[in-house]
Length: 361
Image 1 (cartoon, rainbow, N blue to C red):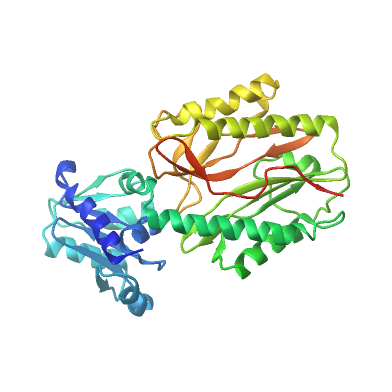
Image 2 (image 1 turned 90 degrees about the horizontal axis):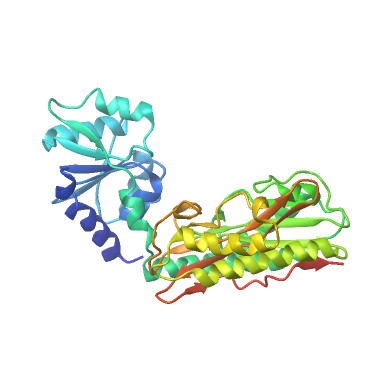
């Protein structure tokens, strides 16, 4: 990311303060801090004002903050809230916006109870997240690298799959390979679930061994250069039954239909509806119990949400997942997921891993 890109983002926020009747915006959520400054530390507050910005952190990050950002930094010797309040008083700020969904009640109360006279905290929900939805070319490049690393890790791990391998051991192999390939960590706890447990959309890997005749769901993602990827692929140990093949075909057709519906200007509900329409034709629509996808970037789940009640219009440069699935108790679950970038007339599917059901003989 270039220095100018971070400075431009901060300026965009600074320029938007007046229309929101704010003297400053206090940013405390780590992904938003990173988006605006490049700072990756775990302790930080950013005060954005019309003419300048101040990034508050603690002595552990004194060297790091100087290396990562051009934003003016202030090293707090005690609690960050004390340093922030001192700046609010010194700069005579009266209307300070804050992130209501991202700030703890305890921190909010510590600020509110010590504000200077006539100063107030005003909730500002989702402003930075809105800016983050459309990715810059550099962000797309980072997501692309993360997707490639994730897919390579899958291919390296899948060759060792066999009957008797534990779910948690396969998950460990997947995460081992993604780290060896350059990932900082997984985007989320890797999902590996076999047999009837594959019907749990967010199953956690267990010590259960994979058995012959098992459907196996693998949902995995990597964080590389700060940006997430997300992919789900299906395995089958043995010879798939006609019922498995039919269900798999239904989900694959639904996923491809949803991808075909993606383009700038399309509503997220329309993309979701394209997947549901296909599954309805297979009488599997009621087995689809979650949304068709979500945004991703600095977080694994970001706006926009690709759901049936969501009316947002897609924009060029958004990074989203397309991941319909069906889940039948006692039978199992099937989900197919790709990471895609919205373009003017369609989308670019970043995930190049084959979507065929991977049969493990």
